[in-house]
Amino acid sequence: MTDDPTVLVVGGGATGVGVARDLALRGVGVTLVERGGLSSGTSGRSHGLLHSGARYAEADAVGAEECIAENRVLRDIAGECVRDTGGLFVQLAGDDPDYFAAKRAACEAVGIETETLDPAAARELVPGLSADVERAMRVPDAVVYPSRLVAANAADAAAHGATIYPHAPLESLTVADGAVVEATLGGDADATIAPDYVVNAAGAWAGQVAAKAGVAVEMAPARGVMVSVDYDGLGPVLNRCRDPDDGDIVVPHDAEAVVGTTSVPVSDPDDYERADWEVERSIEECAAMLPAVADAEVLRTWWGVRPLYAPDEGDGDRRGISRGFFRLDHADDGVENFASVVGGKLTTYRRMAESTTDLVCERLGVEAACETASRRLPGADEPERLDEYVARYDGQGPTDEDVVGAA
Image 1: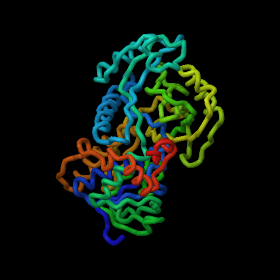
Image 2: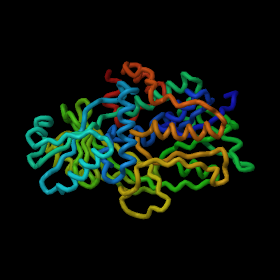
Image 3: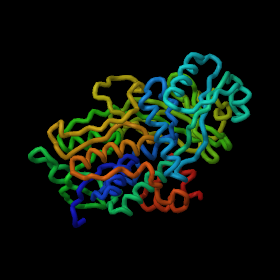
Image 4: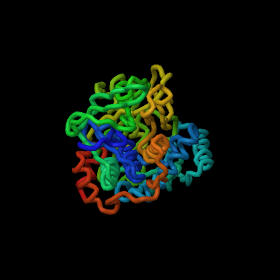
C-alpha cells in the first residue's frame, strides 16, 4: 500500500462495505479492512430475513419504517441478492388475539402492506401449516443472501477506487492531539497508514476496535442459533404472531427451511457456548407453526452474534434492546476523526452506511450526494457473477451456502 487512504473503514460486514461503497461513489478515497473473509461476522451468520418491519411495528415505529423503506430499496437495487417470498405472521390457538390486532394496526400506521387470511387461505398458501392456526397476516418479508449482498457492495466500491482487504486485522490505532494519526494493519494489508478519518463498523466487535482509540463503545452482544432443516417448497417466511421469543421464525431457502432463533447474552463475541438446548427449543417452537420441521433432517446449524448497543443494559435475554442503529461521533469523546456505527439490522445496512458517510463527508468537506439507494449493485441480475464476487473476497457465510454457487 503506497498511498494513505482518506478514510479507513474497519469491518467487512454489510455496514462496513456499505460505507466503503458510498464513500467511493462520492469520490472519497477509502480502504476497508476485515480480519477474516468478508461477511465472516454477524452479516453472514443470520437467518437471511429481509425484514418488512412488521416484526417491530408495534414496539418501534421508527425502526419499522426504516425496514420497509430499505426492504423496497433492496428489491430495486440488489437483484439476485434477494428472493421475494412474502411473509406470514401466524396466530395459533392460545396466542393473544389483541397482539395480532395491535401488530396489524401498527403495520398499517407505518405503511407496511398487510392482508389478513383465514385458516383455510393460510393453509392454501402453506399446506404444511399447523391445524392450530386461527388466522394469519400477510406482509412483504423476503429472503436476503448476505454473502452476495456484501460481496457485490465490495465489488462496486473497488470498481470506484476503494481498496478492500479481507484477512487484514486492525492491529493498532495511534491517537495524538485528539485525532487518530496512524493505523497499523496486519495480515494481507501489512501496512501502517495515516488516514484522515476512521470508521468503526465492526459490529459486535465495535467495542474492541473503539478501545484501540481509547474510546468506550458499550456493546451488549447476544447469540442466536439458526438451524437449517430439509424442507422443500415452504413459500413465505413464517413468523409467530406473539411477543418475540425463542423459535418464532422459519425462513425458506431453496430446499431447506431455516428455523430460529434464541437470544442469549454473551460477554465475548468470539468465545461463547453453543448449547444443544437452543437447537432443540428452536425446532420445537417452530414446529408449532410448521409441524413437519420437528422430524425433518437437520442439515446445518450455526450461531450468530447480534451487534446490540446498550450502554445501560444489564442481564437478561436482551430482546428488549432497540434494533435501531446508532451513529457515534467520537469527536464528543475527544477523538475528532473517528466514528462508530453500531446496532441495526442487515435490512437497514444501506441506511446505516448513508448516515455514517454523510458524517464523514461533512467532516472532510466533501459535498456529494448519496447514490446508493438508486444505483443497482453490479451483477445484480447475474447470480454467477455475484458468486464470483463472493469467492473473490472469501465472503461465503453459512446463511446462504446452500444457494451461493448453485447457480
